[in-house]
Image (cartoon, rainbow, N blue to C red; front, side):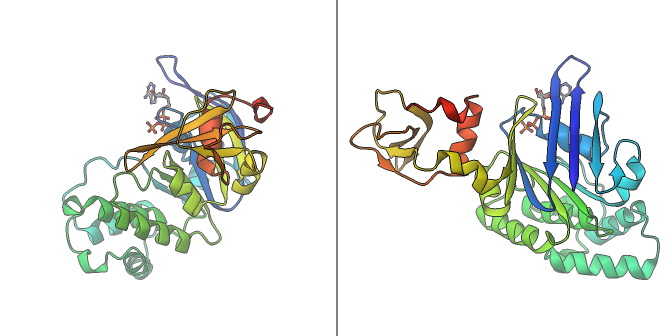
Length: 289
Ligand SMILES: Nc1ncnc2c1ncn2[C@@H]1O[C@H](COP(=O)(O)OP(=O)(O)OP(=O)(O)O)[C@@H](O)[C@H]1O
């Protein structure tokens, strides 16, 4: 549904934020996962036609996005990473204003869409309050409501769950699943759990390059049967993927063909394992025999 070919973006100071990116994304929820500075926001802004690439092509359905940015904007909803400062306007007044900017001039249609979106995002009760007074979670839900004006086919969301408490994050997940029918929702995050919860398809980005993309199960298959969890860090040739703590006790996740030490138990591979593996710039064939 969305095809990206040889897309490169270089900033004025010479930073090569995107380097010849190629991607094919299907409809549904797609995760763009990468560490800080990987190039996620640059890619999202370029897809949203807010900044121009040095070179490359973007095709959305039958639309050449870089040649027809205005046509793309009519089908696009965008939730930026930072909204900046809100004007002192009520939620409903701001949505009415944004509806006009999106070309929804008919008052009855405007009202009907806004009412539906306020209900969907659970903001009806606070519609007359100023958005500037909203909590972080309410602002994100407002951000989604404005992005959904005009029923866009492509929804781009840059780190939508950043800074939300667990209950707000769950609410947002439920909302995203509800709206994901018949759309491509591209969701960027560095929170692996968000992608595991929501996205059947993922693209991993690191240092301006797509290092893997595909249906999540296909990314896990090469690691199955090779992931081990151990309370000790073995002194062998296994690849250390991550070190985490539970109640202050360390747990190591390791990639190895064989049991790395007597304390290691086999566990199912997760997206987080693949992500940490890719950040080490290794190929699956590097796994110790
Ligand atoms: N306006 C800019 N001028 C120069 N360099 C920039 C600019 N914006 C981003 N960069 C650089 O481009 C690279 C990619 O940045 P980008 O913000 O796209 O990454 P990101 O994956 O969204 O990171 P984060 O998760 O921290 O938001 C980084 O090295 C960043 O420092």
